[in-house]
Length: 89
Image 1 (cartoon, rainbow, N blue to C red):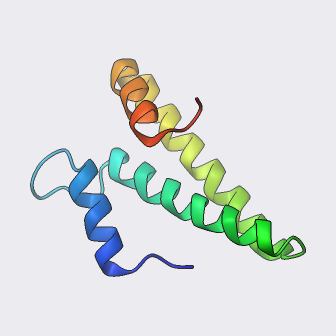
Image 2 (image 1 turned 30 degrees about the vertical axis):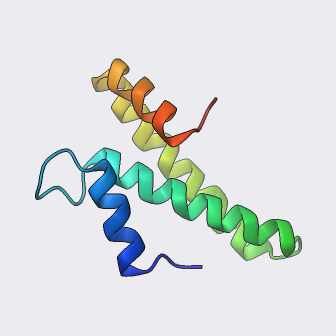
């Protein structure tokens, strides 16, 4: 279920703000979104995996806080990011 190093590098290269960016809010939200999608598909197949469900809820909360931070500082950038990620649509 974890992201491989190659998958992480692809996400970072798509959402980085500058060349050496590896931890900006955009990159973190994109990584969390990928993990949430993978965990959601796992839970559809394994409905009684309650510990993974708890982990999913924690990831969703973390992504929500990061998106709130982005929205507070730059609402236009927030709207573009959620449109690009395909969430809250």
